[in-house]
Length: 160
Image 1 (cartoon, rainbow, N blue to C red):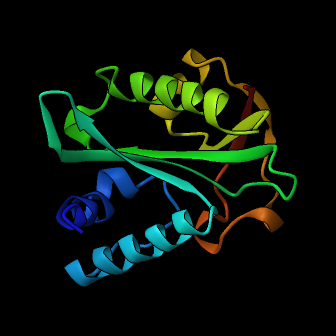
Image 2 (image 1 turned 90 degrees about the vertical axis):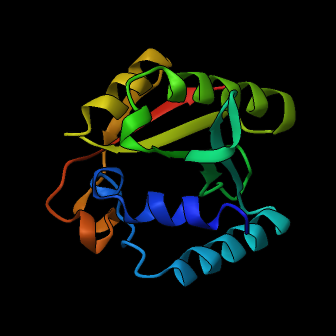
């Protein structure tokens, strides 16, 4: 719960949320409810969720990374991430994703990680390319959330 203010900042930042399909949080209570939901899902083994911090300021969450949408056989999961604008394009998420990929290899049965990204999210596309993810396909309109309709959403994947 100590990270609730940081989660609220991330989930209300227009630049962070621009490429995500989730709704903006309306109050600090929303961040506490979100954290409760995340903690419950972690306890149930439904996802992993990490706060991204700088080495010099480990108490200040500046972004998040998650593994979720696990396939029924436990071999595939989706990678998601966000980062406050002032920390973007500095190699932080590259380092973070590399650490997550190492975690996956050492601690899970996953064989494939996928990421869904809007075609106009150039920074995220660059990150996935740098991390050797390969383009798989575009989401069909039927697969998209309502907020994503009309957007080009690409799926990238990587064997781990």
